[in-house]
Amino acid sequence: MNHMNHPTQTVHRTAPHNSVITTTPSQRLDALPAPIPKAQPHSSEQVCTLASVVVRPARRCMPIHLTAAFEFDRTESSLAFGEGIHTIMEMFAVEFEQRVAEITTYVGSHGDEDYGEKPILHLEGGSLDEAVAVCRSIELVGGGDPPETHLDGIDFLLQRVPWAQDLSTRNVLIAFLNADTKPARSGKTPRQLGLEMRDLGVMLFLVCEPTSALEALAEAAAGVVIPISNDPDLGELRRAAAELCKSLTASLTQGGTLPMTFQT
Image (cartoon, rainbow, N blue to C red; front, side, top):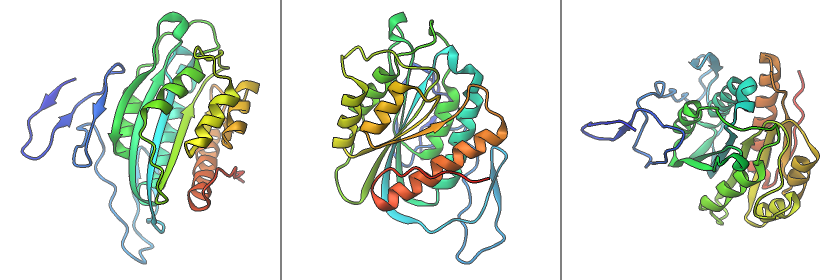
């Protein structure tokens, strides 16, 4: 990782897929787009863009702290919908940057442990913009047979995020997965892992191809499965992003994961 000197901050130019970035709110990545301007009260004209997504004036800010952990399948099997993952992340950032009072992010990824590809923590305690940039920097390589060790990757990130237990904080884990999961090497079943997430107060959202194991995980965690294909078109991406944002918004205000069907 390269660094450059700056009078007031340390700038990380890139985030290799095998590195960890530990940040404070004042630290920013050099590769990030310019900050999204804040909408003024009663403004109906302000419009800005992030990665070709039109951003409307800010909605009412929820007075909560959001701990958001993002987990990715970084194997080659994700190449077909890798750009879709990035697009959904950017749409998510547009939606929640001004909707939530404070957001702390974590980013993890996993390969296939049967091929020696261990889970990695890429970002620890970062901003939402940093999470978007780090996700774009993760190289999708490796893997072998189509099933991957998704449960191990999710469990790895679950154990490394300091989930808050106070009433003003909401904990969310959003996983982007391709294909089915292999059994967890820890021996935990999907149901056991899901119940552990529920006990920790972590709301689970899976953006994935639905399978029986992943649906069992989401059901035990009282989470949400948002279906997406391997090669989504723009319309499918928008539907998935909208469903994720609507469900998460409802969950943040009501304290549990609520599936919200997006209507075209």
